[in-house]
Image (cartoon, rainbow, N blue to C red; front, side):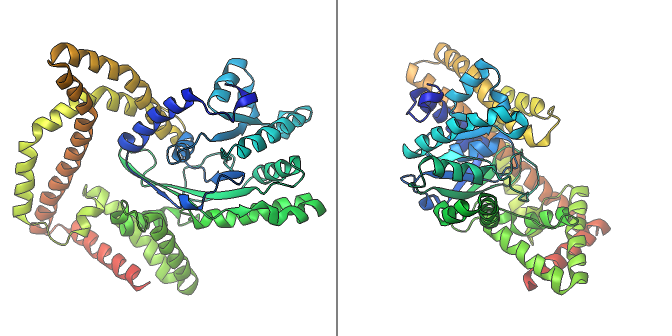
Length: 442
């Protein structure tokens, strides 16, 4: 499988994808929400255009939420070495040459455009990250013209006889690199590039800018976009304070709730700058005081922390402690090594990518080892296989046990803070209540 037949169905790619899907959708994230897939129609040549904040995890978000062998376009300089190029082609990645790669190489894009059209005609989508690079901020940056130029030149390669759709895609992570978070992928309504064919024939540069601006506007509708740079941290934190409890909702994803909240806050900024400034200040104050007292927003949302519930929770934790210990020990190497190694990366945007990569690699090593050990130590064989399959389940249970432990400890901590009339907690509680009241009024 190479560049010349990259659009063909590949069994090796399928097996690799199934393995990546399992770890991505079931282990690494606790929930993956894919919204708007009914907007996709691959019978029409389609380019997917996702926002780019979390390095290679953004590509995986698309790959692991669609049952399709997608082809990605990437910068040509990573294809310089033949071995690397052959691997990239096998992973269904095509090169795009830029002016910085040398004017003489731009002609090679003609082959890519024909390959792209061939891929789309086989009902395999093409994925292009239009921002060009990643940035760990919930904001859409200026789009590169490349995706629009590729769309028009691909249409030109078919003598404008083919319709081409560009689908804006929004990707949102409840946290960029923490384990067991929620990933939301929203597929927007397709943009029909044919609407701009006449404009492109008359003035290519103008049509490219028009299409780019349209794509940028549509992408902002399906992702979390915080325009304010000065108050970015405050507004970003406000999303968690107000909407964190909706992270797992599928019917009305948190992403849309966040956008509605941001829109209301932006409106407040225009109507009442002083109230807006107080809102931003309260958001950061709640964040800092909660961190100081080692409390979560989940603790603050609960009006009461009954002693009976906390004692029952503590009893449950004691009874299930063996489950935690077993799950933690069996999954310690995969979890801890991937965490330690990922934090060594200099670019925060690659932390999650490195962590997931170590998960995959260590999984390939540890899984066969655990299977062999289980078959040796446990009889009959079917019980050994059952025990082997239980390992990742125990790991997830251990993770959930640790979360319940933190919530229970936090509940006892709040009861103590209330009993001792802690001044920092009183300030936190008052500021939090004021913040909730202000947002409710919006």
